[in-house]
Length: 126
Image 1 (cartoon, rainbow, N blue to C red):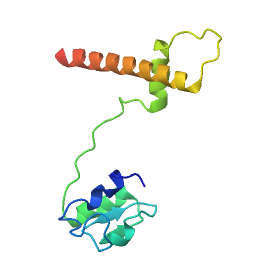
Image 2 (cartoon, rainbow, N blue to C red):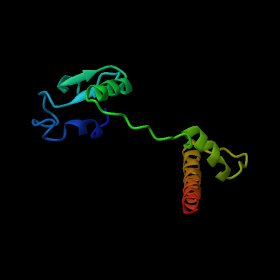
Image 3 (cartoon, rainbow, N blue to C red):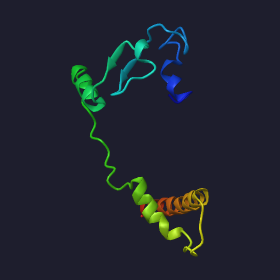
Image 4 (tube, rainbow, N blue to C red):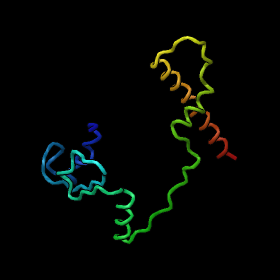
């Protein structure tokens, strides 16, 4: 578990009136393929696929699902690192430790992100 994020579902008094560290049932629905630390407190617990669970829930509530946004223009982490590599200084043949490599890649990714944002802003002005 990653605290405090894992406690967020039971922080509200309308969800769990007895608080974060209590054991009572909470007004909580958990949809997760793996066990969680809050399973015993959940009013509804499903080990199913979240997309399918919420599709059925929306159908039951007679709600229409919005068309999901198009994210095809986004890059995954490996693509971003490949694109950012042009901002890395050429290798001098000397050993560079992993911490230094990570620092340099972080700087290169920051430069790439700034460039992408600038291009996006320029395109929106057109």
